[in-house]
Image (tube, rainbow, N blue to C red):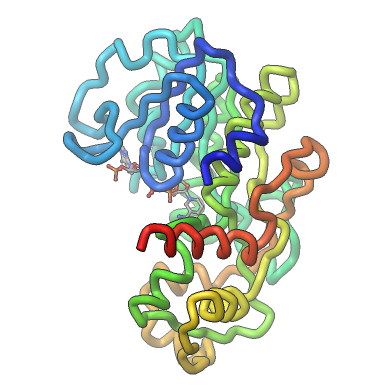
Length: 299
Ligand SMILES: NC(=O)c1ccc[n+]([C@@H]2O[C@H](COP(=O)([O-])OP(=O)(O)OC[C@H]3O[C@@H](n4cnc5c(N)ncnc54)[C@H](OP(=O)(O)O)[C@@H]3O)[C@@H](O)[C@H]2O)c1
């Protein structure tokens, strides 16, 4: 619930103007939290008329100067272009650099930049070792942002879940696959904690706490089977039969296969212990209970 996030956050300065590039799943949630905190937030989408589009940002249309005027905070939630370039910097780098009002710039990246560690923990001190093409492009965008000298902070995210994007949707559609790969874990983060962490980090930044890279992950990397079993119990659905990974991989999409080929646990000590962000959903159980209550309240 939005109140859960808002009540644990300090407000942003009332005249703040927050521009979010990429008002998709996370972008919209961050925008909602910002608005509940009483500030102006403008969110982009690519196509005119899309839900939640305050302005259009794409390859073709020109961005009006009005959008940027007086912007204090900017966040990009947009993945890299296939060329490896960052779409926001590609079009707006000079505008951003010329701004006299910007106090914080954020970039949502992925923990995919760490590559495969065969199940070992990765922290912000771990040297990135991206192996998938999309993670190589992502790491290149991170470097592009870090090299700008803007007041930039990179937030590295593992698998994002939350209402309408969790184990429940496939259980309801009957498309869940119980894939068994012993030793395999995935880290994850609830979308409300992305929103919470963004506002929290913006406030800390203004107090001089400015780490350039922060992992935003929950406390409990977990095997996928445990997550599905917990969700199925909540929603009272029986579990499909378990398929060994070696068999499942034969029919997996290249994208799905690439996720299963990497195994790492994402350490959140910087965010949660050193900077003292308190996770709203510290593990998949608390997060799934929230998704379940949203699901049932919408029925
Ligand atoms: N999903 C995950 O589990 C996960 C995990 C780690 C990191 N990430 C990354 O974290 C960020 C946020 O994730 P999300 O799942 O919330 O993203 P999302 O729902 O897919 O939203 C992405 C947003 O970026 C916009 N966009 C995409 N390509 C664009 C382009 N070339 N030019 C302009 N706008 C473009 C989309 O526009 P439209 O609204 O018009 O479609 C959308 O608003 C993304 O960069 C994502 O890759 C995702």
